[in-house]
Image (cartoon, rainbow, N blue to C red; front, side, top):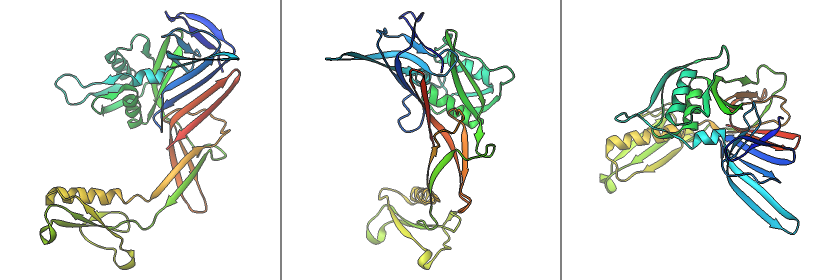
Length: 322
């Protein structure tokens, strides 16, 4: 792991820390903070940068906590990672437009978006030599934060968003997402999967009206989870529930009942964990596979959060996948 550099308030390199604890997280999983916590026996001013040159670890100091007791003071600094800085900006549609839409070479698209949110020249689009994939027409959700929007744009095009601090600025680029599982000797993904064969397959929607005058609609799912108003599963295979929506007319009740039954057709639940000691470094957006040969269940999971902890010369990296 590279040295941790700290700047002064004007963001000029000021010190190289040796004794520190740094905890960073970025991504969009559960509690995807996009922030960092640094404990160091040094006074660091507000707005200073902490970074490891050439890598993804770093950010801007936003707050300090001073804990004083009989043994002395402990200074803990918190702030936004580079990803958190992006998350603190919002991609807005142009005036008079419903949505912001982009397309073209990834480097050009990223450059225009960084300029739009006012982060240039500190953030710069810088595609690696020979890597400049195409972003097909992509429509952002309205008023989405820039980090979520950029990662969604990349995902829709089979890419992953990369950031690295290099010589005074943050490089931003997109590259093809990697897939692990089939190309290495041992699986690096543990999973806990529940497969459900019988789910609700008959949903009775109840809309406006009272008693015999109440609007009623029936929707059915077949063995494969297809939903229609034709019943195919009866007897002990039929599982029926009601859906009470007493302010709906028939047309809207039909649509909502149909969608509700579709939502019930999930084949089960799955959670996935990247195994400790996997021996490879993953990025948010990479995918992994694992298969249980007994049941035939195969799980593909995407890395949605990366957690890096550094204490002196010891570094650990953990991932959340979904």
